Amino acid sequence: MNQNSLYSINQLSEEEILRILDMAECFERQPNRDFLQGRVAATLFFEPSTRTRLSFETAVNRLRGRVIGFSDARASSTSKGESLHDTIKMVSNYADLIIMRHFLEGAAKYASEVTEIPIINAGDGANQHPSQTMLDLYSIRRTQGGLEDLTITMVGDLRFGRTVHSLIEGMNYFRPHFIFVSPDMLALPAEYRDYCDEHHIPTEYSHELTPEIIAQTDILYMTRIQRERFTDDEDYEAVKDSFILRADMLRPAKETMRVLHPLPRVNEIAMDVDKTKYAYYFTQAQNGLYVREALICRALNIPVTE
Ligand code: CP
Image 1 (cartoon, rainbow, N blue to C red):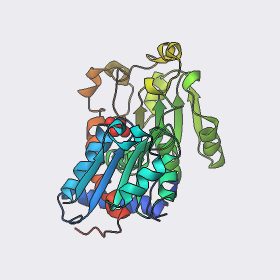
Image 2: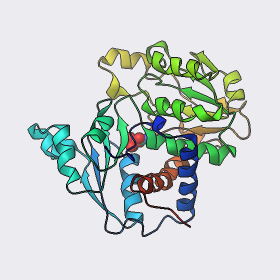
Image 3: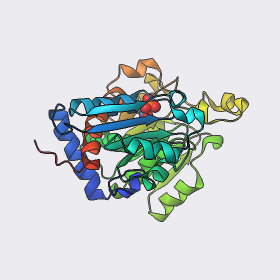
């Protein structure tokens, strides 16, 4: 295993999180650098993606590296029955780094155990999405001036939402207060409720996104109800429109409150929110480029200097 593999956000100390965020700030000032000349990164996406894959690939290109890989596993020998083990072994012969999204929880950790090159988890099933968490932390710090003592309200699919699960763990160092808003069917799994309790993180749970909740929130973290995670269409139909944020609902919000969303959205944020000062989700996605440049340099032990 390569010690720089990143399969879970809880592998990173507070110090390392802050160091990566500072590196990302350097890349925001100057995204085009020569740090990856002669290096090859492989992007293996066994699940669909727009932002994560394209921002990682843009990051490699802006650092003057090369990208190989696939965005649809059906075009790879996986479709002929090749195992994940053998795919990772093979790609390790060609690339210096593997960035991988997979539908199975634990796939990235497993991949990191079968290769000596670093693996970056770009999302494994409903488990973790650590690079998303790093860009969420970057966006929170940018909009709030720091990460400490914030009230973060998470809304929607808290059961299958890997970005939710990773962000809970990523915020642990910074004394958050969480408000979890979901229907029962999509409630936060016991594992993450227990995590909050064990780490003495104050939590509240609600079925409704009320004006009182919006008024005390610093970051409103909206999520999509993920059709692809349901095995029963009726269950999806029952909860798919549970929360739709409209601009008029933001009247009680603090001036500094910002709406984040890992994207893609379906209908959970109405288009009229986009025009408000509270909308930050498109800039959040843009921040993903700088953060992923930093994560790639961390994975390859490349020092980042101004
Ligand atoms: N946020 C996120 O993971 O988006 P994609 O699925 O488009 O990569």
